[in-house]
Image 1 (cartoon, rainbow over the protein chains, first blue to last red):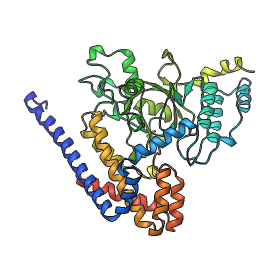
Image 2: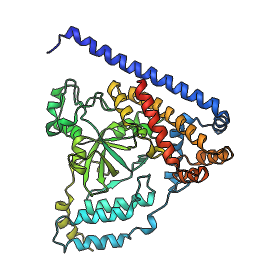
Image 3: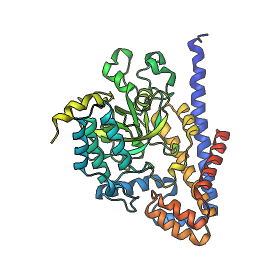
Image 4: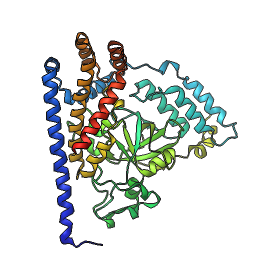
Length: 323
Length: 104
């Protein structure tokens, strides 16, 4: 039964209490855990203090080191590199050249999948610059989309990580699941995306904004080492920034727009995708898996959002670009 | 990003769901996520130091401070402890998850 407006204050009050309640609980827990730690390991606290590090903020510190390493091109303690074992660009070109003679329609995707399997480490981790450059070539030549791990000097903390399923985002005040088509079963996120509503009212919602919500991606902007220092520039730069997401286990590729920040680092995930993005990457039951995420290098935003059907797109183009 | 070497072992999705449920803005959500992050780091570091022989603490802290993201630390710890540190961390995470869910 529909409730009168006079009764809806109860929901608002309950939400406020929940948020306040959770904040207080977590703050108290944080205080207790820190106190216990200091009591048990006072010398560890002193060690970190001497180095100017707070254990609770170790993530920021780590991101800064990784950011600096990305600039110099090497990690301080580099993880095992696969760069030396990668096929040479000439081999890739040769592989692509052969596509022109091949009759099977799924060959480009198979080729990409095979090359990704050779190039990427088994477990997700930040990639070295050389590895990213190699993938940029693969994506441009096989998927047909120019994408970059670093664009205009911006780089995500990682470009190879796990993506998890997200819910729909509210596009405007009063938006409901009935507007979200066949994927309405995924539900609606209770809060707004990091950039708020896509439009201030239904009347102002454009087709383009609707598409943005349909094909939205979530990246961990909140953990960028300079996120707070470089506001509001970074906030604007990332808003609806187009990214190429490639499922490294099957080669499926989707162009998506960044519309939320997350997931939390302690979820084991690094990226998020709308229900439509996830279905395009791995099918209707796909909830989590490894992907590569690069920025689309397309200043005029001409690359459309949605799945990239490069098996259809590229065969003739590749034949034309043979050496 | 696997910005801390034990990140891939920390899976607290139920807590994330709860935070998302009550947060009214992304700022509020980030703040609450931050509290959980601090709790996790202290709990996991405590778990590691509890298992690691006292004589190895200084070496571990030096290594950790130089490269907190280095997954090679897992092998270092496993060798020094003489048992699989991943299992200890996973158990600690499960306990923490249950503790948090009970409290919130």
